[in-house]
Length: 389
Image (cartoon, rainbow, N blue to C red; front, side, top):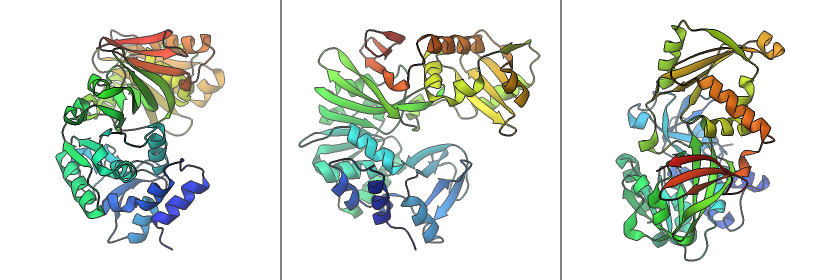
């Protein structure tokens, strides 16, 4: 039997994933109305598989009405369906995560909401249905996506304000807002001050936040009059980055080739690559403390892989080789080169994490002021990292 929106609603209600205040709206706004007829869904290996509603309606509905993200654009539209790539640039987020973010936004009554990243329009449609379309502004940097969202809203009988522009600038024409929601991740030290300035004192900002290391967390900040905004990490949230904060695609491959051809000394480390890559709390700390460092993993199989750490601005890199023998011995081969000794920095960050009793990522928070942005542990006065703005 072909799945419907009612099946998705029933699944999430059974999983207690539909928060109070959103049940009727979630049931009324059909996700399938917002997802394009031609899109992609990741297979079990994370590779995008093309879907066509006309040619394969059952497969399309199976994906769209399940709790999975749907890729709606690749390579900023340069890769046209049914071709594929690994560079997704727009998507319909996982419905349970959509609801978690809307719940975290704490909307009520007559709140005015600014959304950054319209995408398919699904989030803004839910907000408009709950608050009233006149209270919702959504900004989309991609003109094609913005135009499509307007058509979808019209067909759905909804009319939130859709602005084509850079979401990092907010939309001052309708400020101040009670709530700001970003569906694009911001990178460490680069929360747009415009979002804070366009929010009323006592208002809240909810956004995915990430370091260059990867992953991502959901953060809620409260705006304080004259002093900026501060708040805590809530949960995990993996989103595409604001377009003006992205790095060029293909940097990992470039540094991988550089490392493969380099003749540099080999040392060993007792810090497990498994931990700094796969433990989300350790990885969060490494990302915060090893500023600007990115990583990539090249796997031969589950037991044989290499971790590549690189920093684009300095040209520095490090590799750590994982084998069954290295894992059993607890010693891994390291190669590194460049002005930054990146693996030494990773070891130092890991040691800091251990020395501080391996804190959870949810114990951290952010503060944003006109002069600086900070990451803190447990209390805003306990600053772990500082980024000047």
